[in-house]
Length: 112
Length: 110
Image (cartoon, rainbow over all chains, first blue to last red; front, top):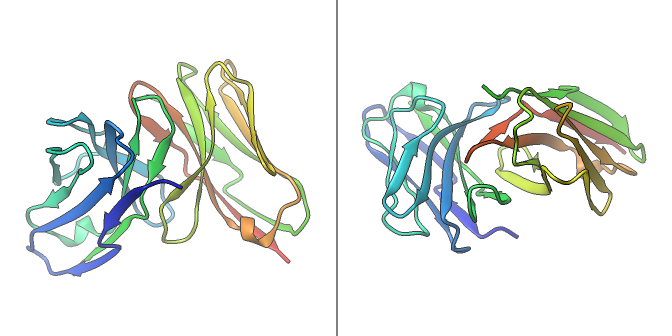
């Protein structure tokens, strides 16, 4: 079983609020990823990290930012939430860029 | 740009049937292909990983094949059960990134 955790699982927040979605893994994986998924739609990569102090933007433009100060922790931050940010956010990790990827349970974000 | 297509988009079968889910991709320069299962509102559970040098992988009632040159993979589920009902996603790994298909929604009725 994969040891990758996301909190919170569900979040309803007002427009303009700053939020941070947490993602932690205990497997010592160097690669971590954030995907965004709208209901019934495919996953889109929004951020990834090769290791500590390394972050890159993914294929889908996103107003969120990420940081990687510790290997096990890869939080995603929205400085000012908008209704267009309503979606499910999925965090993943892998050992190396080409190994099996493991996903967390996701955070379902609703901005009202 | 890599594009991944999954057919069918939805499938409904009675319990006990064997079934095949299809995945095709446009760029054969992949490192591996991974099949996932996603239950409603949940994250993804890894089912099988096939490296580009492999032809197939098996785990229990699941068997995945890969034909890299033709850009195709299939997931075979034997003796389907109601608990297999979920969305099945395939993802191909190119340079550092996983690209996902839109999935096949499977419903297995008792």
